[in-house]
Length: 285
Image (cartoon, rainbow, N blue to C red; front, side):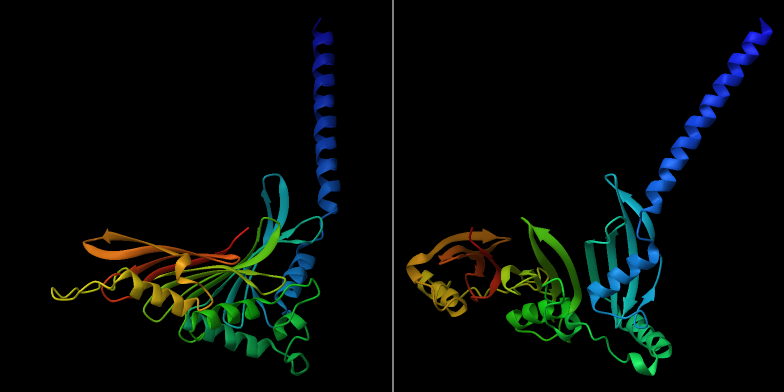
């Protein structure tokens, strides 16, 4: 009886070992198909239009999201922080995020880059870094940012806390760009990554900037508000501007909407000063 029990126990242990070996073998075979951390770094650099001499890598490694394995790659270059998600099997860029470093970090990064550069690698030859479409047919982040800043009417020196992320919106690759102006007014843009066209944009005035109201100051008329809107969209018709007078924190403001060809605009305008406190535009489907 004891001999039979021992035999059954040994058989059970042997089966368990076989199952464990099979799982480890399967996992090893799957991992062996991954492109590797070095190839993932190269894919990220190529997408960013940079060379390995220009980048300073931080923590990078394999991660998993909803069953999909990807390499998370982080590095800094030329005063920017980059964070990439690279598909572990295909090497395709799943997600990319960038943001400007603080001035102190940017100076330190520039010094490190200057020490690591070789004379023959002064600048990347990638067309993406030159502000044109790269081999994938997409414009560079720099070009998208220039488009947004030019539309907002401010320079890169005036912009604060610039953040750029490439994502997909209904199957279309877009750059999502956010930054602040000199008075901390907030700008947000969606730009088509293939054509460079502005899909939508949003503007919010800094809430901490309080508008003072003189007791004798009269509110602007609807016709005057329409003139302010038409200054921003000269091709529009005043008949297509819809206004509603409302109160916000004890101050009157006009809320409005404008339908113009393939664009739809929504806005808020201070009823006394005519200052545009919010402005949003989006392409109509």
